[in-house]
Image (cartoon, rainbow, N blue to C red; front, side, top):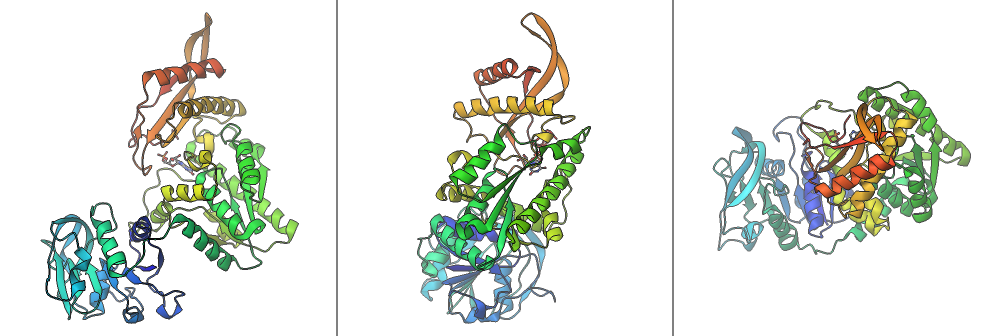
Length: 521
Ligand code: XMP
């Protein structure tokens, strides 16, 4: 195990991700972790980056006992400064802050202790492009250390102790902007720490299940909402594996899910996966509240608040029915959601209020349990496959909490829901039939609130317009429209106008994000 001590950098989880990609197990703990309280002996320690200055009075510091563990230590960015701080305190604010690409030149020390050159082994014959993001830098080489790498702006871009296996680097090897970064992490974990590359997703399942059991204890119970999306399903299945029926899943039918979705999700979770599930049909309650509402943000707020009310009511029923001691709320939060919420850049502007259930914790006095918070989407999919979740569900496109309410532009009525659902279902069916579902990141049909003239069977009609949207993206922050061939679009359009009453025209959205968001509202 490599122990990663987190000083709050946005990139810390990427260190553990790179280690997982190398099939090396790692544990990430807060930088303030007491070494005496560790339940395992790590083979090496990585001190992450962080937003602080080591010399600031309120700066976080590691338990100095980490330096007595007798295992190799690598400090990254703030971690490098932390090592220097513990070895003479010569760190200062850089005259020039450095963000972005830098060229690192590796310095060899042939003839000295063999470990010194190990970190850059196999990298030293080339200049290495690396990603810098720091304000402070070392002003002086700490006592007993050597320079192993430099850049034009940072003469101590890499340092190593002459005798001990202590290393520091100013750049971030964990980000993709440092192309050879994984090689360097491997040098540290495998060659220097002696870790074996044996870790797999199955091992993750085992350790996570043990961790959940220890956290929840022998009698407490857990509740959580499921939506049919991959994250909540994987989290629910993992929970079920860990504590069986002491985990209660709740599926709230808000009336704006996709065609037959509620039924499909129910069957998959209960019959297929054995999860203890309650389905609440609250569609009337949601639709009554949505009556007459056209504003997208109002729709989101109504759906979010109603969801919280329904969920709380249902949770109370579970408690009184079984006398259960419900202590935890499960959330399928992934790492990218975590980064957004702990960003040090300050609150970013709200473009759209994303549906979240944060309010539940305060109202219900529950503790949060987030077994997926260190994983990325592709890892969750791998985990889902390992847990036996059907392919269809594992590869499901994301679906917004407010559902097709934000894909019906204008008022959300049962008639509009019916049209939008049918059109969407045809589009997705055709995408799957053409083998394109996995190539596309997200696809759906939206219903425009205007009418257009058409001619159907010699009759003049005046009906609605369906807009199709399909995008490719990796982070959902930027996206490009998917380039279907004309025949495919013709087939979908023909089916929609023939099979969905109330629609006489189909258009395809060719707007990138930005400026167009993925959803229409
Ligand atoms: P936009 O439309 O902002 O969407 O480009 C980016 C991603 O977020 C999803 N999305 C939402 N998800 N509640 C959610 O849970 C929401 O209110 C919401 N709005 C957008 C959208 O489907 C896309 O994947």
